[in-house]
Amino acid sequence: MGILSALRLVKDDADTLKNQYAPAVMASQYNSWSDSAIGYQTNSIDLVSALQVPTVAKCFQLLTGTIGGIPLNLYNKTTGEELGSPIWLQQPDIRQPRSVTIAYTVQSLAAYGQAFWQVKSQYSDDGRPARFEWVANTRVTTKLNARSTEVEFYTLNGEVLPKDGVGSLITFQALNPGVLQTGARTIQ
Image (cartoon, rainbow, N blue to C red; front, side, top):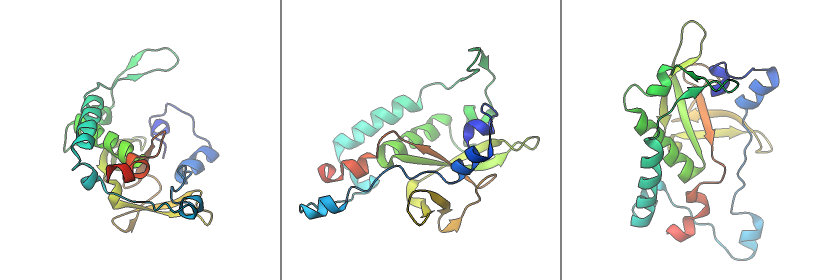
């Protein structure tokens, strides 16, 4: 489910919905045959270990703290008019302040190149998402198609998730692979 289409800011068609339900796999693996052919070994590091490096921790604190504190407003793209804020824009997760949810989303994007929110509730009148929960990347796995180019479905803690509605995932994609993939050797 596209978050903008759920807000009715964009028009859905069958292909758009199909593509969102099976997002493309954008990042290639850094441990390709060329890396191993020239003797490199791809190291991996987890977020907890990376954050034990003071420089990495400080960078993440600056990044997440700054972006997490930025106010969010909704505007009409055509007229520029500021629209009322839906409840999820003010506080996506009822259990914590918006700045915390946004900060952890930014942290996931920077570390992994992808972040996830799970839809927790919907508006009864039109089915749009009303509340979300940030989900740690380590809890999410994917089932890819035969060519490993599209996601067939997501699992959370080993349970298959619905493709839309309550329980489904909203995915956020970074413009670049995460630092845990691109900078693992340096961080170690």
